[in-house]
Image (cartoon, rainbow over all chains, first blue to last red; front, top):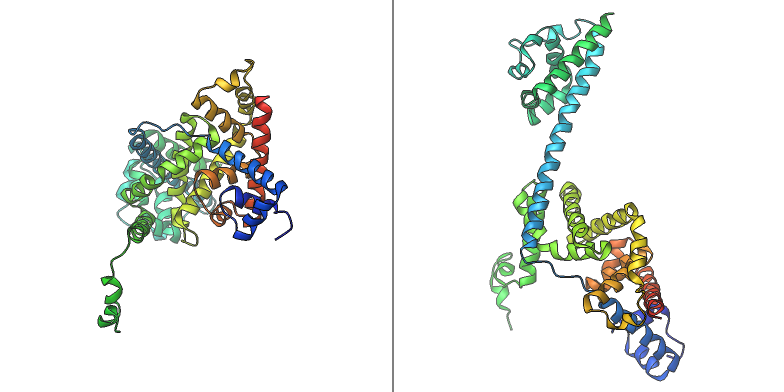
Length: 177
Length: 202
């Protein structure tokens, strides 16, 4: 091998790699020897950038932190999942108001127990919207069976229930006016 | 000469051969990945425990301080947990995880551009001749700062290759580039680092 080593090969040689013929060329070539030495000194320089070793107790704390973030993330996802039926309910209300009685025939008696998560004073016609919602959408009905739409609604806080009821009421009034 | 293994019925022979520690580790990792995909948090914790040190150290080299490295390492594992269902095993799990980590580090860097000035200041010691008397950690900190000033690809290549003992092929897999590009980036990273540090010492 007579040609000078390429940049790629230079990197290999600086890292202690490279083929026998490449090493032989460097040994006999002053220019390549200098370049490899420069690259090797840069590798040694970079290797001085040690990362301070944290306390042995740190690793457990890191895992705990990861666990906590995963748990918080799961809670956020569940909250988001609540918004899905809320948004769907709002959209469906608009449809129901525009076409009253659309789902009346498909009502199931008795109503779903989970609806009691709504404030007592709101257990009125608005609730049909939710029942209709659960029965009208196959996708949501499937989701209800697997994920538990009823459970989500049952777990609504008072504030969330009020928002839902208010949304339903406003949608209904808006549609009637 | 008849091999002992041939005396066993098919399928039994392989299970009778003692497996190496590395094979057992790989199998344990495969099990942990499969269980994590099913949503088993304890299994994912096994993966975190296995990779926490290299991931933390990778993050530290990007952010140069413990607090941000800790935050970033947690973010990497959270992203991995969210995405593990989509991990199809086409690459090694470590490659997949490093890819998430490098992306998280690059995003962090993009969010924290203003701190580059602090790194610049940290690199230059105003005291005449003091640069030769710096303590070991201070020296390491300066080199880390210089590494931090490298362009993104060069920096990622240098960190993965030199500090994580990965092959050129593995680094290429993580960064989504070719082996030739990895070597070229490493060459330029080393040249720039040397120039940077020699310049700072003058």
